[in-house]
Image 1 (cartoon, helix red, strand yellow):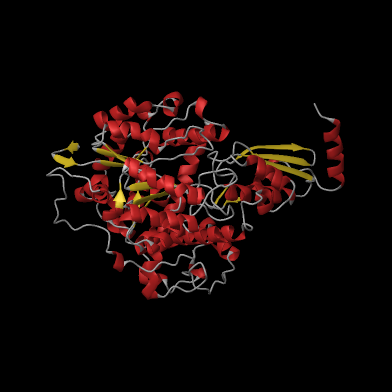
Image 2 (tube, each protein chain N blue to C red):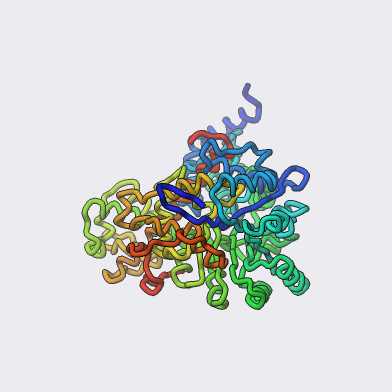
Length: 347
Length: 242
């Protein structure tokens, strides 16, 4: 819980990791991957929050518990697994690894699972067993994961459709989709989210949370989010711009509130890339710059409450303590889905 | 010390064309853009070195991350190679990308002049023309947003925008780039041509103007934001100054 100037905010961190990325668990691609993450961390964190690389590669469960819950104001954190076994032989951040902390602290974590449609029929049963074993109600999908000769997949793949149908059957309703730099076929834009659009239409009972609000394709994400009421945006990677480039951050939030609205955005730190404490404090303090209010509206306390925790709590059916809900009554920015302009996705 | 090879190079160039200077090569690379960011690779600091040895030019490129998308990286390396090869006085060009997950595939593929799908066998189902065209359209819309935002800041009423023509633009660098983007998309650059058009060239009617402006604003926010992030990551990765 974060309390500031007499206001209380229930915090759900929608995207966290506990990875193992040291030299004894990676190949050259794994090293490139974690160094890329480290540059994200070092470039966008305030100086006092930058870790040494060695700590960043493997910070461990105790550090995570301290950073999120003692220091970081977080009430609940959602483990989003990323397997990456072609880069990290024991896995980068798997459900099985995350389960250790999640089972020790069931009131602190949401433990998401994952599937890879390239496992085809053989993986389907294992996926079902995993869901039963860990009770996950969400999955994190990384479409750019390298596997053997494959450099990625899309939600349009027939096996992905089969797995999504299985998710629906098992009550796994929160589908977090993380796009990356590669896909099959490699000549297409790997960050494009049109496949999420199709899946959201085909599976109206599932909720699709596009991680990183589609960055670097914010616009493509906005076009699909405006048309599909079951498409949400996760703010990991977008949040830290609040420090280095606050005016750009204001524009991202402004665009998202305009196209998607305040009910479908989820706060996330992407811990350990960024520490939630400074992100949350900066966000609660943040106001839309005066010269942008006319275009984007205000960022009200209620909007912040929804983004910081209430929206995720609704998706994951989490108990929200009394007295931290929205105050109501204020005019909120954003428009209803039906009011949005038609979007020409050809450009 | 001057090598024999360089001496030969100079004598040859005196007969035909002078071997290019670094400045000339850098200027040529200035016409190569990052297709996603719509900025010159020289301005983005992606050119890490230029070496000229007589009539041979060797260029090294670098990108903000190890995992930047291979298809865009390929376009930059091939475009750079083509731009330098077109210079007078250049007989041999070597353009190589460093520090990238698919550097080997890209460098070998570009040096041997194969197509993208042959450089990544089994991983692609065609060339990169569609990708390039998609990002040209985005770049054009973002540029249009910038011009229209400037006009509106100067007091041009939103409704008046629809009646403007290409000829109403003040001459200047922004206008020149915008017109170049129109040419690349095959759009009319006649002074009498309507200014506010979609990426397909369709005239935006007054009733659709607000929607159009909202959409191109989002495209501009996206591209400008990505460019800023890429610059920052490159500085962090290579310890260069802003």
